[in-house]
Amino acid sequence: MTDKISNSRHPDLSPEEERSQSRLPGWRREALRTTLWLVPVLCVVVAVVLFVATYSIDQAAYRGDFGLPWWIHTGSADAGREVLIGIAAAIITVVGVVFSITILALTLASQQFGPRMLRTFIRDLGTQMTLGVFVGSFVYSVLALGSITTSGPHGTFVPHVSITVSEALMVVDIAVLIYFIHHIAVTIQLPEVIARIAADLGRAIDEAFPAAYAEYWTERGETRGPTPVELIELLDTQGVTVPAIRSGYLQFVGYGQLLAIAEDTDSVIRLVNRPGHFVVAGRPLASVWPSGRASHVADALAKAHITGPQRTLAQDPVFPIDQLAEIAIRALSPAVNDTFTALTCIDWLADGLSNISGRYLAEGVYRDRRGAIRLIELDPSYERMFNRAFDKIRQASRGMPAVLIRLMDSLACITEYTSDREQRYVVRRQAEMILRVAEDSVAEAEDLDDIRERHVRLEAIATRLDSGAGARRTWVRASPRERSKNGRDHLVAGAIGSGRTS
Image (tube, rainbow, N blue to C red; front, side):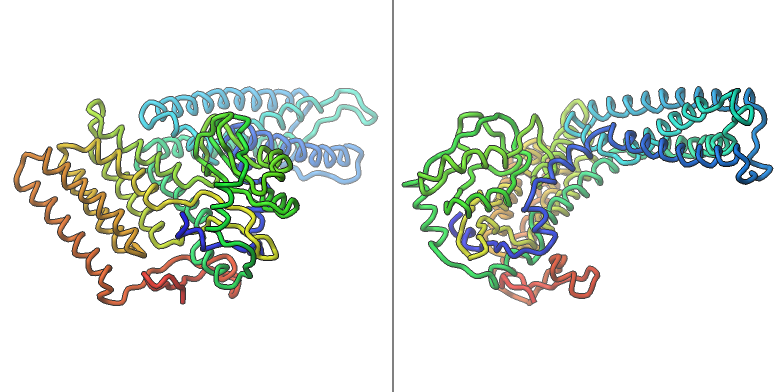
């Protein structure tokens, strides 16, 4: 940790990073996103607002302020009631069907992909919008039905505009139903599920490890006070441990809140856990130095750490890695024996690890606006993420040459994107373990030769990169500040091994 922790972050951040550290929106957004009620409630609100608007138009026409086109008139009050009752009854019936299909899809997902995949289906905006459109249409039709009156200053009131809008919404509902059936049929397919999780992994990587970002502030940020190594020694010898008060998976850490309280109390905080770790009540949550500040910091630590019964995507790029590995392990189990699904997971894991290999992972130190270190967190570990991706798949693929060959090919691909010898050491170690598994479990000599050939190819790539033979550059997405220079996304080229961006 001491080698990487010297690459510190400065508080004068881009607007995007400042928003992510100054408050706690991420876990709230994730919690609201992973619900089936938020979007339907918003659609109901829109339906009520729409009805208020159309009812006002109907009232104005009823008073004779203006006339309505011939195609809007819907007949008598009884005819209007029949139309609205038929629409409302049909919609509520279809809503029941939609809910039944959704529950069936969730049940199949739980059995085939594992219970942790349910969050991916619940977060699906297409399903949420379908439920919302149908519920909103039903509420609108009921409101229009209740507005019909037989007694009024100008006789019977029939909301012709509202009834016409209800009929238009019915047409929209039919189109949405067709879309939903197609959407569910596509969503429950394994390649689509895996691709969605891989997309979540890509977004988590971009959020946790912004390309060319940490180094930008390392070079330009003002620093003062003790070094990270000196502070770690003080925290270990003179710091006070603050225990956790709640058990659960750490879902979100308010780094901005902790940085502010540390600056106000003139203290240094070292966090023990990262988002995704399981926190046990009574076990160490953080350490604080000087010891006299611990009582003031304890409340802020409790408020800044959000725990829950399960992991989320907020600040936890390892979570989608574990999801892909879980699907691959299930596919390789004797009960399923689906080799091609495992190969698909390996391909997407290789894509994510290649992306991570081109990023700067050293972001363990946060400084205040004067440049003094105030917050130290557990370093993100390339080795940890890499092993989480491939260890269990390797262990489950004994005696499966096709899977072992794909694993070795994927490692060779990732090696091309590694940025230093330490990362290549992690890849080589995993490749050697795969080779030992193959030599111990693969009986066919030619299959074993294929695996050995790919291992030799990987070693050649790693040796070439270690020796610096041939100039090679990796392309990574620019930081938010760099993208703002020209108002659009562009790419920044970084020399591998040099540790600097051009």
